[in-house]
Each structure stands twice: as C-alpha cells, then as structure tokens.
Image 1 (cartoon, rainbow, N blue to C red):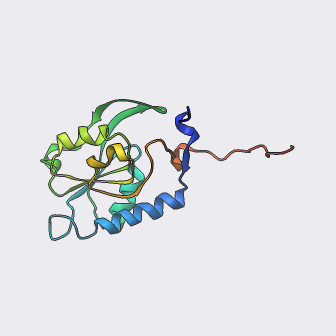
Image 2: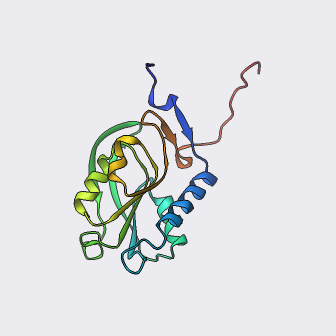
Image 3: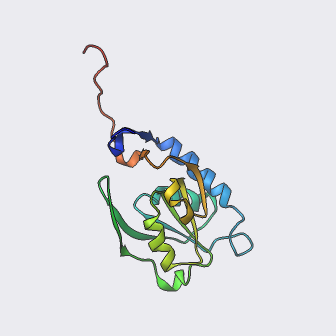
Length: 166
C-alpha cells in the first residue's frame, strides 16, 4: 500500500478522447428511451456533465437540454453533495424519459442526491469508479477507485522541463 495523493495515479483525458467516449455513450443509449426509444430531454450535471451531455444531445437529436447544479468537490476534496440549481419541475416530473449525464461517477453521492429527486430518470456517465457504479445505469469506461481523472477542461498546456538537462 502506498500513500499517494489523489493526483498521483492520474488518467489524463484529451478533448478528442472525451468526444469519442461521449459519442460512444450516446450510441449505447440510442433507442433505449421509454418513448419508442427516444428521450424527452437531457440534463447535464454541472459542470463536468456539460460537454458529454451536449455531445450526447447532438448525437441523439435531443433538443431539450437543461442542467442540475450539484457541488460535491472543492478542488480535489470531496464533500457533501449540495443542490445549487434544479431544472423546471414540469419538465422533470419523476424523471421518466429524462437522460441525466455526468462525466464521472466516483463515490456515487452526487448521483444518489439526483436519483432521489428523479427516481425514474436514466443515469449515464462516461467514466465510472467501483464505489459509485451502482448509481449509474449506463457508462463507457470503468477506472479504479484510486485513479484521479484529469479532464481537459481542468488542464492547461504548459512547458515541462526535460527529465535530463535543460
């Protein structure tokens, strides 16, 4: 057992990779909505779910897109999930026909809060960790619980000093 910081076992995701994986998620969901295979709306869990939800909405030709704002991280420290903003209650109902998308399920606490609000929604993430897998209905890639995923919207290009020399 090593004493690693969360970022020391990193899985770096590029814009190209999140785009490919989000399209794969959409393809997996295609035809599985309750209305002759269609979904009524896509709801992104902000902020990480916004890019995958936009890509899925485009691929599935879903024009109604909304967000639910949940705060469960402060930088790399996970805390209690708090709902900051919810979609229109008329749109959401109990979640039937609604596709809720996030980038990642980690502990499952965020999805647990959203699932309590919309128990009949379909929950999809691009990436899943074992502790939260039970909270998600569809995902593309599973990573180990001790892996920290670096998403492209959290990264910046910068000079890196060579291993040897200057």
